[in-house]
Image (cartoon, rainbow, N blue to C red; front, side):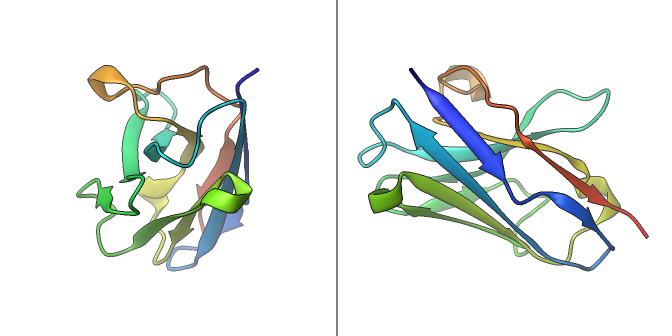
Length: 118
């Protein structure tokens, strides 16, 4: 059974930092890309960051220079370090293996809520 368990979200002031974690189970993790997505109220889910099996990373323009994605293959875990957070980063964050059309390959987990507000 495929499962993604995201954690690390919370309330943070603008300019603050958070580190998100996602533990994956039931999938082949080591040789496959992983990604973080987010969904804000009233908006479609969007790809935020992607890390390939060789740890090459790509980012949405809106988070470049502020977010860093990384992975620990031994722990089947992908991380998202977020700095200089802005109110527009407020969203539920999810991880998944990248699928076609910008979607995730598997069913989504519950996500973790990040709220950036003063």
